[in-house]
Image 1 (cartoon, rainbow, N blue to C red):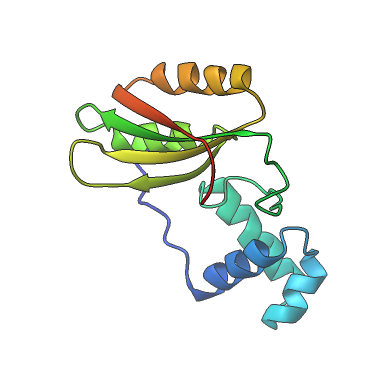
Image 2: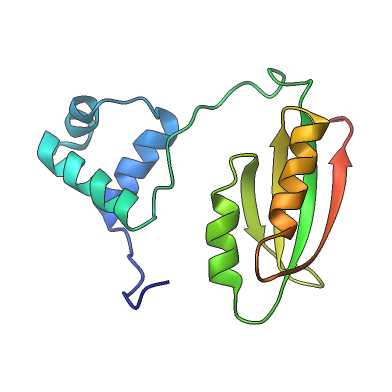
Length: 146
């Protein structure tokens, strides 16, 4: 981490993020029209959101039943010392981790993992466990949704 203060998005930034959550393919012009600001304003705000790590990327969402053949799991993660921020940053870079939550109790984080196959799932497990600051983890495969 650098010595810079943490970037805190303002109302316009949050509104841009909200629109992108609903339509990640929205053009700059469409966002500008919806938000009532200039296209250049949207572009500079998006650049800043990406540069500060607030936006980590752009992705798609699919129906829950679209990837029924994928491997899904929940991983509980224990972190050593004061490395939480750096561990979270690295975990967010793993595409197969769909969501990441802080928690209380014996574990520090809970990760929702979606992988295309068991071999991809195994790669993700190894990748997480190799992150400096990850002390321990426990993973449960999700067999079916009831």
